[in-house]
Every structure is written in structure tokens, then in C-alpha cells.
Image (cartoon, rainbow, N blue to C red; front, side, top):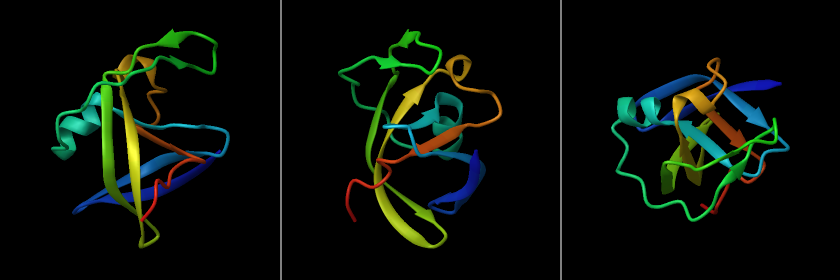
Length: 101
């Protein structure tokens, strides 16, 4: 697994999991609150996790600007309960990281 750093505003998040096979970008509720990100919008879907369980996201944050190695990306993040996400990571970005910049 590849681990990167992501910058959101003035905050640097270390140990962000980069998963090439993932089709969603994930952030935990706890990290969203810590970063002071806006209230999420309704997520109109459920996610099938790697262990084949299904979970309902807490919401979406659309058009969030992040930086990876100084390169800006506009992304959408799905917010999940901390208990659903591997506790080693509070953020995961996947192959659909870029919505357009």
C-alpha cells in the first residue's frame, strides 16, 4: 500500500492511504470535524466495503480542494463513521481522486 501526505487548507494529513483500486475518496467523521470542513450533503448511495459488507455513508463533501505534492485537486469525499474505516488511516484517496481542477 502507498501512503502519501495531503494538504487541506493549512492542515497536513500524514499517512493518507492511496488505493488505486478504490473508486471513492474517504474521510472519517472525526477528521472532518477536526479540519472544520463544511457540513456534508446527503450521500445517495451505499458502499460495498472490501469485506463485502454494505455501509451507508454519513454524507459527501463535494469540490474539496486538496494538495498532493503541491499539485491541487478538486475532489469529492465520502464521510464514514470511524468504526467502518481501518483505524490506521483517517483518509483514503482512490483512482477517482480528481474531479477536475
